[in-house]
Image (tube, rainbow, N blue to C red; front, side):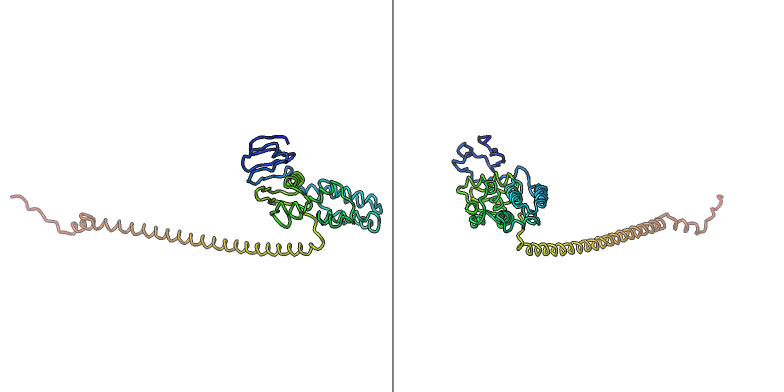
Length: 308
């Protein structure tokens, strides 16, 4: 442990632990002799990001090429399987399993290596325990890898995993050991992301890397993709209809606006004409205006009588 103190952040091994509120941190709490007393969830983010699947592609390609070059070399293929299943950054094995040279292990003393590869591609820790008598003893790195894969499988099924369920599936004896595994072997590695809620004793999954599909899962996956495609087509059709409706309404609004503008112009012209006529009428009807002047001109003029 690198830091001990009172605060909202503490470095735990190689991962960051962000407490939701300040909690008194003691050496006993951090070293595992006493569980953290915070009743707030602990939010832990993966230190290396969520690009596990992208990092795997180069590793898978390397193992596939090497396996393809080891045709009829059972001991070397068994060693390659051991290396692949213990690799710290490899979590997908179906492409390696499909290499044509691997079936040559059947019927040899190394056939159990092929079973181990299938176990890592599709199985979980409890599958190994049930068949331990038929499989070779796993190395510590392989045990850790299979338990990591178990977490991924459980995260596919449920998004809120109880501590009790996880401890049972992973053969973990206490909460501290479970949280250390989830933090350092899962979240820091980047295969899952979520929140450890100590008060509710559960792990809330926010992200989990995908595992290999079992052959019997392919039909369901194809059906799911077909349903998604159909839903997408229907949604696209609805969007196109909405666009057409919006265009039609826009054209109608433009025509309506033009009609209103034209009517306003007509009213303006009518008002101008009325005002013009009204102005001429006032000129001819005013007292002493043009009409009175014409009347005065029409009257006979009187001659003045000369003065006597």
